Length: 384
Image (cartoon, rainbow, N blue to C red; front, side, top):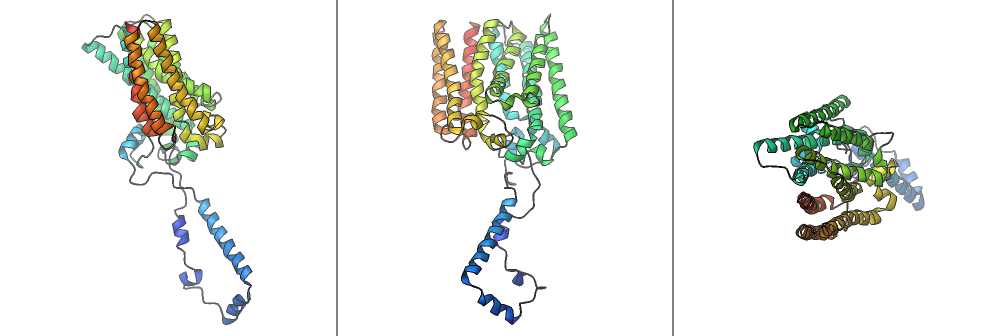
C-alpha cells in the first residue's frame, strides 16, 4: 500500500557508460610526461588493486540509488483505478482517491450482502428490495471498505515506502490532509447509509448501524497503533477474513430478515477461509513487514510453511462446511460446494504453491470466484 519516493535520477547504465575524466572534461589537461613514467613504474598488483577499488566504488554508488520499483509510464490505467500493483502513475486527484479505496476489494463485500439477503429467505425481486440491497452494497463496498483501505494505506505508509514506494501516500501524490479528509468522509457516509437502512427496514433497534460501527472500529484497530492487529498474523488475518465474510453477510441478512445465532457461528467458522485469503496478500509485503517487525505468517513461519497454512485454512474450512451441510441433509448443496472446492485446489497448485509472490494476482482472479460462489451455495442452503 504505497507510492513514489523521490530518488536521484541516475542509474547503473549511466554509471557504466562513463568515460574517463580526462576525455570527458576539456578543462582537465593531459598529465605531463613524467607522470606517465610514474604510472608505468607502478606494479601490476597495485594497478589491479586500484581497479578493484574503483569498481567497488561504482558498485556502492549504484546500490545507493533506490531500485526503480514504480511501474513504468506504460503501467496499466485500469490497475491504477482498481488499486492493484502494476498501476500507471497518475496525477489526477480523483483517480488517486479512487485508487486508495482499492475497488478491487469491493466485490467480496458486495457479494457478502447478496449471501446475507439469500440466507434471510425473505428477499424478493421487486424494486424496493433491489434498491435496499444496492444501498447496502454501497455502504459495505465503496464507503466502509473504501474507508478501511484508505485508513490502512495511511497507517502502512512506512511499510509501503519499502514494499511499494510508488503508491500515492509515500510518494506525496496526495497530501496528509486530503487523505484524512477522505477517511472521515467515507466513514460518515457508510454510517449514515447504515442508519438509513435501519429506518427503511423498520428496525426497532439500529442493527445495521451497530454492525457498521463495529466493523469500522475493527478496521481501525486492525490498522492503527497501539493495538494494530495486523502485527499478529493469526489475529490480524482472522479479523480481516471475518470483516470480508461475516459483516456484509450479517448486514444483508439483518436488512431482509433476522440474524440468528447459528448463522453467526457458521459465518465465523467460514472466516477461517477468509484468514487464508488474507495471508495471500502478506507475501508481497514480506520485506517491509520484516523490516518493521510485523509478525505476518510469511515472516513468522517462512514462505514455504505459510503458503501451506494459507491453502489449508481455505480448503479445510470449506470441506468442513460441506460435511456440515451433508449432515444437515442438504446433500445437493454439499455436493455443489465440493464441486466448487476442486477448481480452487487445482489453481492453488497451478499458481499459488509454485510462487505466491509472482502468481498472487493470477491465483486470486482464478480461484476466488469459486470461493465466493461457495459462500452463496452455503447461504442458499441455510435459507431452506
